[in-house]
Length: 605
Ligand code: SF4
Image 1 (spheres, rainbow, N blue to C red):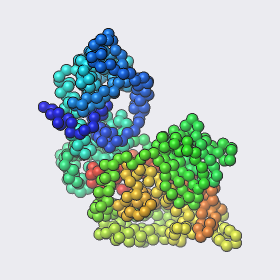
Image 2 (image 1 turned 120 degrees about the horizontal axis):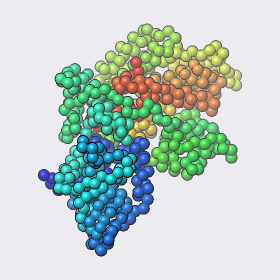
Image 3 (image 1 turned 30 degrees about the horizontal axis):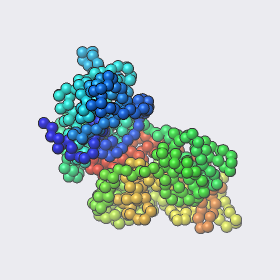
Image 4 (image 1 turned 120 degrees about the vertical axis):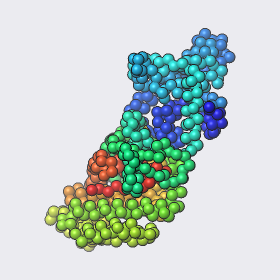
């Protein structure tokens, strides 16, 4: 029995398309309709292209009273709503004889083959069509039948709008509204063939989320139930049971996301250059000479170092395409970025702010991050040091145990600082430049440069390696600021790094385990593979800085590292570091929303 009060528990109108998503997967409905997330895949792009042709002309539908006078009506792309049920639908085509209307809904794929060999409709499509019938009825039309037109086979499937279908549809409307009110995302489908076809798969991370839930439950309870199911209590009292919350399947993780993002960052480093746009292509000019053209479709971000001019038209096109523009000082100081509206997901940010007020949560997460960082520093030394320093490695191992014992963020900072000192004391042992490049270089007879690292110094960096490290950490902070923002979190509110004006504290938190793996490793490659040489450095005031050519060489080393495939220790598949930053940021959001108990820090083996 469906009560109207159930259906109208929220005052907004529910779009018929969202009910289609709800039937396909309630989590998809939640992500799209409640969290406001959307992403295209090839299927949705093709569907959007077909609908843009259908929607090219929008007709006015006569009232049902007027329609009685008409012999036949063909109205395209008509939006109607139902106050009674709180529904809204955009109807591709309405065919009517008098006031007897038949909605026709265009679908991208093929119809369902029924057991008897006849053609049928997929459940999400049936429900969406029934919503269209309901809004037509509320607008005075009679509607006993609807038609689904499947583009792939160009076949029509007729659906009778009977009481049973109406009851089924209203039950689904009520369930969707209950889910919206509960504000609890349903658990992902387990090992479902729907996920590879789902456009939100790289946002949802279905198998990764299920695996993290099972993994943490396994680590904590060390108990299984028969049939390989792990029991996981919910961390927070959410009031609404997530679908599947009482048991979690430990299914294998499929690689449903692509290993790499084919789009690339653009670095603009030559002072005085000018960037305009024409026909979705960025035109980079030096004085009046065109020196580079880049299609917007090939870009994921634009990085501006120093005095480079972008036209308002270029900025507008980049914002429309959701491509952030990141601004650095000439010396590599990360100033900030311009992006489209961004930060729309207020529910996630509310949880972020709530958890940031919890000392327990901050300490727990900070311990994970610091432990991961120390372990990754240790791994880098073991892999790259000319003669791995056994005592230092043992000490770093012991410090990971100290991390677990830390009772405050201040104590943790002390352990992290100690680990950094030991690690950087041995950093020099990982630098393997040849004798010709290792020669000290004098500038104005005063300064001698060599790739010889003593200790970490910054603001300003006083030697070439510190200059490279500082630039690299700026780039990584920028990439994680972009990742946090695109996921919907506030990059300025962290858990380990405490809030301070202008500091992207969440980005700094997230980057801790990646500092050695991405930046330190890129610095070593840049030096050891001569992508940057000692002649690429200059003294500017108190600081040692890179020349434009040196920066170019380091950007290449950094991007090579970001593009490198690495095996995720928990999921077993290979992804680029750039892709990994996004996955890890999404997993942190899962923890903030209470979906997984613990943030799985990335540790390389
Ligand atoms: S990826 Fe799978 S679980 Fe996630 S929203 Fe899509 S269909 Fe649902």
